[in-house]
Amino acid sequence: MGRRISGWSNVVERPDWRHKMVEVSILLEGGVNVESNANADTFDNSERLRESFQRLLSSGLRENEEIKIRVDTKGSYTSVLKLKSHLSSTTLALLDLDADASHRERRIEQYGLSGYEEFVFFMIQAMESWILSQPEAIEKTFEDFTRIEQSPLADDPIIKGINCESIEKPDKKLNTLLSKYFQREKGGRIKPLKYGKLNNSYSLIEKLDIDLLKGRFQDVDNLLNKIKALTLDA
Image (tube, rainbow, N blue to C red):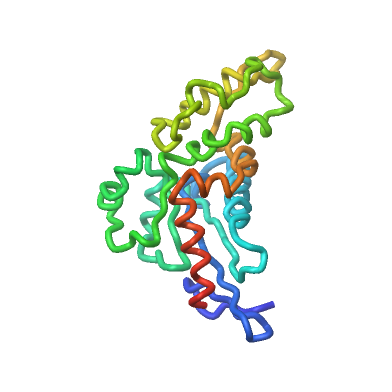
């Protein structure tokens, strides 16, 4: 095993001394903070969400790149902001913008992140925007559920021909789609499927295609390029 050279620098020397493995931490808005009093099921689902994001973002790196991504779910954006002094080339923040891309500079100022811009990336407008951009992934995730509507999800007017970065309240829109197209038996009754950030978001995230996300969300491409550039400096 290699050894870590410094705490937040996240650089790990390889035993052969020829290459350095760079570990990048991503402070993610989402899941639950480890210091919260959530129940065990919620913590389990938060861990699944963390793992799903970690696999998704890692899939955007070539297998031979000397980089390891470690995602750390922080719950609310305020928990991430408390750690802003740690932000660096190897400790990045991934936050919901909760608005369209034109609000980026305003949000940076509002969050007190001026001077840290190069280490902050946004899900625009939110994590669910990524999910809405790939309706085929939604259908794959819930393929074992009973369909209510048989038409392709991609043809629904909520998302058809629409830039998902422009969809307001994407979590609400996602819940509307799931309730419209899928149902399940629960407690002996047939009920429409509901969306929950800490209930089924992790299963949706793990079905996403990172290359499609890079093509549709500039911040995804920028985040991965920022991480890849670290191998040049390690």
